[in-house]
Image (cartoon, rainbow, N blue to C red):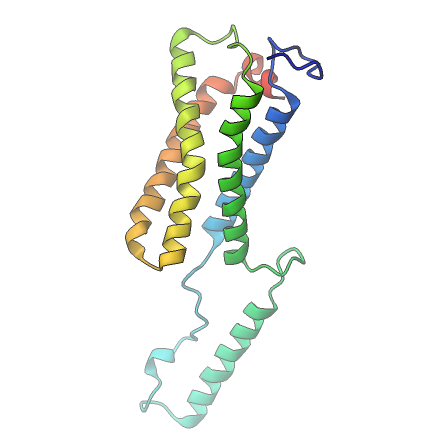
Length: 191
């Protein structure tokens, strides 16, 4: 389906709306991974020596541990990421929901907007690889956040292998996707 607003022409590139969804997805996924890999879910503010408390320590030492823990928790409560009131875990959740929404919206919008013809710079094998990697990436844009929501929502670490495995699969599919699409002649269609 040609788009009269597409200055590159329908045979040369994607619609502006498809480009916007693609690059919003790239930004959301990059932010999600950056936040996720910097997230410390084990940060419980227990000061060093906490394991000694409870009868093996003096009252003064216990008071010191309590003060250190209270200070840590106050810093965590006061943490205001980008002025939005989110801590990293909450931002990770919001980004995950954003990636999930984009992961659902993109294939639906593809059905409405269609796709341009294949780039003449891709061989038949590269077209097949591109088809399968895009399908994998679109599926993983749903599976990664859903598995994360299951992990957090149930509190059951049994979902962790699925979440980690989905990350690994995502990076494999992304590498394959980039191997066919990071050439200038092909990349121009999405810019």
